[in-house]
Image (cartoon, helix red, strand yellow):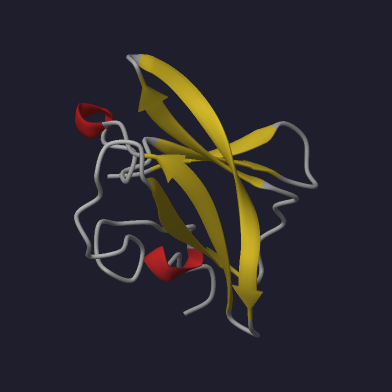
Length: 106
């Protein structure tokens, strides 16, 4: 089927152990949060939107690994309890095209 969009073609993050460590963090711990981006993506960077002290923040992610199908990024987030840093609200992926690409996460 040509032209069919599949969800695996989108950047992805969820609360599973693949993306967030299983351990329960303590206040002040740094929690690595992973994101998967398809290898066909044109992003030049990845930023995770989180909330700390009631204020939105953009946390830069570093490229962790890549293969022929996907790239994995990791953003290090400071755990602040109720701020829920292990769940990003949105990904900001500046691409090669015009504007900024943003994918909202569930």
